[in-house]
Image 1 (cartoon, rainbow, N blue to C red):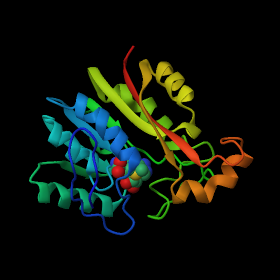
Image 2 (image 1 turned 30 degrees about the vertical axis):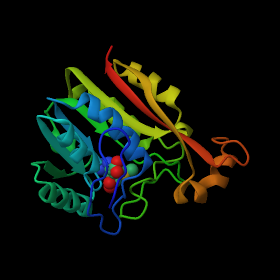
Image 3 (image 1 turned 135 degrees about the horizontal axis):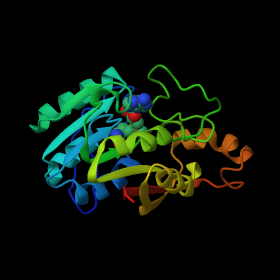
Image 4 (image 1 turned 180 degrees about the horizontal axis):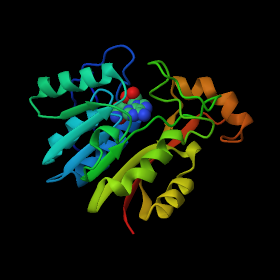
Amino acid sequence: MPLPRAGSRTDVILFCPPGVYRAQSDTELLAGRLSRVAPGQDVLDLGTGTGALALEAHRAGARSVTAVDLSRRCVGATRLNSLLHGVPTRVHRGDLYEPVRGRRFGVVAANPPYVPSESGVLPRHRRGRSWDAGPDGRALLDRVIDAAPDHLTPDGVLLLVHSQVCGPEETVARLARAGLAGEVAARARIPFGPVMRSRAELLERRGLIGPGDRLEELVVVEAHRG
Ligand SMILES: C[S@@+](CC[C@H](N)C(=O)[O-])C[C@H]1O[C@@H](n2cnc3c(N)ncnc32)[C@H](O)[C@@H]1O
């Protein structure tokens, strides 16, 4: 699919089978920061989907790119997209850092599921696994943060994208508890997509958005060792 990219590239064709997250505004916002920090680095793309961010890391001149996803289809799509683009991504199927246990990276980038869901039980199958993230939207985000210090080199960088409904302040506070200094490095205000629209009443009920709000702010948080 064409992914318009302001500033760093015009478009990328990505094979995106049904059930695989189609690269969109959050992917693009994170890609913009990734392209600045990836040159010369070993990059880990957590929750790779189609591999859009892995390809961006290659394009920006990463030394190596490793991608992980829980979904077989995403792993297959990323392998195929890497092949089509002639880049050597190491693609693993598994739960977050589990396939790269014991390894450290100069850059860890993640666009994890972050949409608040009705229940704390995360979907086990394809549908919803790209976005459902528990009642506060932080089920995956917090796990990515807590284990990041074990997977970053001493001067490594963690890049995370999520919606403001998950609380960027909580992200920065949690990073600090993990020994990482984080700050919001990029923002974009976008209209709700179909998933956020379908959750709007739930989000209003929980006080995560104001009545009638149908715009969300996406943030990229960038963190280094404190
Ligand atoms: C919002 S999508 C992002 C896809 C891609 N990185 C992008 O930016 O377009 C989140 C991805 O995380 C994957 N995922 C969900 N839970 C995961 C887990 N526990 N471990 C690894 N990947 C996971 C989903 O399968 C999905 O591909």
